[in-house]
Length: 348
Image (cartoon, rainbow, N blue to C red; front, side, top):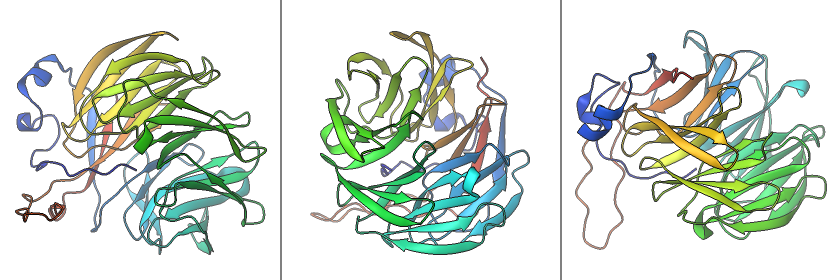
């Protein structure tokens, strides 16, 4: 997942006018929103919604926090997970899988009890995005440092393949019929993987897109939505790789979502603290419906498609320390007790 240094996130929620600029505030419509405080230290990355059990999985550095998706009440934790980035769920197998970026491993846990079952070491370095492909029963991790994907047979927990990629992978989605799509961040590309043969069968350029990160799919109309660091969302035909459209979004996006019932595409923009809501008018035409204020740092999201709620993670940060000449920037410290899940109902 693409993590960028962000300005101070000192203001919370919609009442914090300082968290968005005046133009955005003037054009934004305030949606119903809730805020769940989540205890504990550590950063975060992907959020995963468990539709079958109505739970939200929140990755927090060395553990995965599990919340009741109706109330925000903590239900338990999965630990240890060394530098966890994401969680994949296989409800039919009663298994969950966590990608451990620092540990170069995948944790396997019981989906009902959250008990850790085993840790699978992989050769891929810095496993980041992770997903379960129900048709093949395979778990895919997308490894940022080694620029490849690891394939695990979920029935045996054995690593069965390593797929070389053209560059650094970011988020990935499955169409459920034998194809996985993944953004290639450092090359502004999108690759298609055949999940039966575990190989790349196509790689397409993302026109007008720099450093794609989050990815979503309209499976009915075969449209892929890549959010890009230059404030654009790139739309691609999943069958041919044809560039369909570019749509303006906010700054610092790191996740995308699609709600098939409302025909809405979402981009969570952590740098400016907004959520871009785009309507799919037709498969080839898109209109920005609104830009909603959220909170700076709210860059990842998950969707409950039944209730049309969005979950976003955010926190407030201390001022960034001075940057020494010739040295990389130091990430500012998170303010204690500021981490929260924002629950947004954007409307139809």
